[in-house]
Image (cartoon, rainbow, N blue to C red; front, top):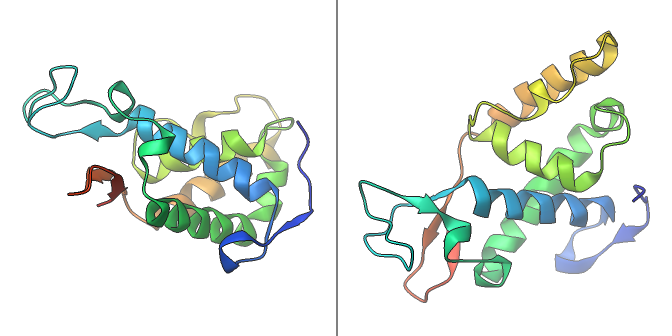
Length: 153
């Protein structure tokens, strides 16, 4: 898959088309790495024993508002860090950028900073800068809204 610079104008914002792939990776990772602290779930999660959101939910359960927020966040991050994203881990795809953005921003111990172990200092430096940029935003996770959809808490 290649990164395209074609503009996507859905949701009222002009972002490169790669941002939509980035958003998809970000949301899939949020479902996989985020924890459902609800008292009851289909898979036996409790307040003391949370389960990943993707045990019980998928992309279709994410509210349109939450998708819009994720798109705006990923779009802004992309624009502010486009050069480092282009340098970071050659051959990586925008979906992976979104995945690493979610992990890094939430302090999961993986993400931009650990993806590349090679000898190219420019790539390692880009990963460090992307990590620093992601951490500025603080953590974000879903909560189960009263209508049964997932929203950002």
